[in-house]
Length: 116
Image (spheres, rainbow, N blue to C red):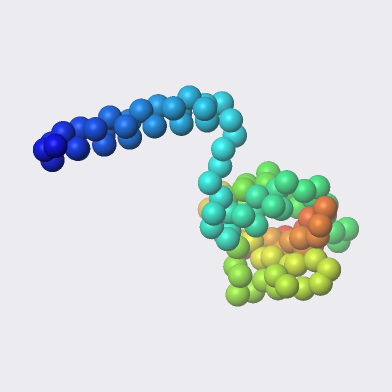
């Protein structure tokens, strides 16, 4: 079998596999959250979010940062018992927003909200 025939068979099988995958995964909420930031943000967003009593929060900005923000692991205390503490930073309307979130088993509590 010549090289060009091998490449043709490979591309034919590969394209058929892509079509089958597209058919099976069509309409399903499949995500690829493999990075540490994405996994933690997905975990926090899947829980009930509560707010500390002594802070004032812009909920739109807070939701945006919880969805699109970056976790500052150097300032976070992820192994704290019983709930890990995460510092999430993001930009919203050209303002830097920093959230401190206490991530427990079923509840995520926002303990600090700072706009700079």
